[in-house]
Length: 254
Image 1: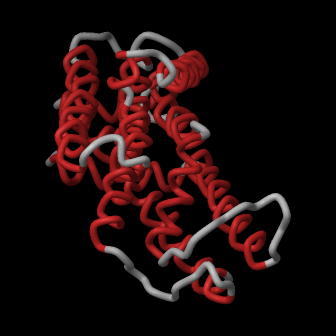
Image 2: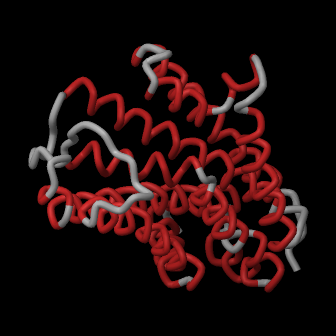
C-alpha cells in the first residue's frame, strides 16, 4: 500500500474519532473575547487597535499559553498508536500495509496535518468573530492585514507554538509503544507542564519553543533568529517520529 493511501486512511480515522472533535472546545476562547469586547466587559482590558489577522493570532497565542492544545493533542496522539496497540487494531493494519515504518510515519503525518487544520479553523473562526463583533468597536480597524512586518511576527509565533504542540504529540506517540494510552496521555500532560515550568529557568528556557514565541512578541528577539530556532525545533520535533518508526518495526504485535 502506498504512503498516500495509508495517510488518507489515517486522516479519515482521526476525523472519525470522538476525541478529535473535543478540539472544538477551543473555539470558545475567541467567541468569549469577541462578546466581552463588544459588550465592554470590565474583566477585559484591551488597548490599541488591531486587524483581523492580529486578533486571530492573539487568540491563538492566549490559547497556547494555557497548554490546552498540547494536552488535547497528547490525548489524540495516545489514541492514535497506544490505544490501537491495546485493542489489537494494528495487527490487521500491519498485515495490509506490510511496511511498519511507513504506517507510523503516515500516522504522525496525519496527526501533524490535523494540528495545522485545527489552527486554520481556529484562525478562520477568530476572523469571523472579528468581523461580527470587533469591527463594531473602536478597537477594530476593519482591515484584514495591517502592518505587514508586525503580522509576520505573529504568524511566526503561531508556527512556533504549533511546533511545540507537535513535539509533545510526537513524544506521546513514542511513549505509546511501551505504555497504555492512559499512561501515555498522563505523561503528555507531564511534558506540557514541564515545558511551562522550564520557561522560568535561566538558559533552559531558550530550549522551549513557547518562550521563544513570547520573547518575539515582546521584541526581545529578532525575527531572523526566531526563524532559525523555529527550523531547529521542527527538526528536533520530528526525531521522535523516526525513533517510533524504528522501534515499532521490532516489537511484537498481538
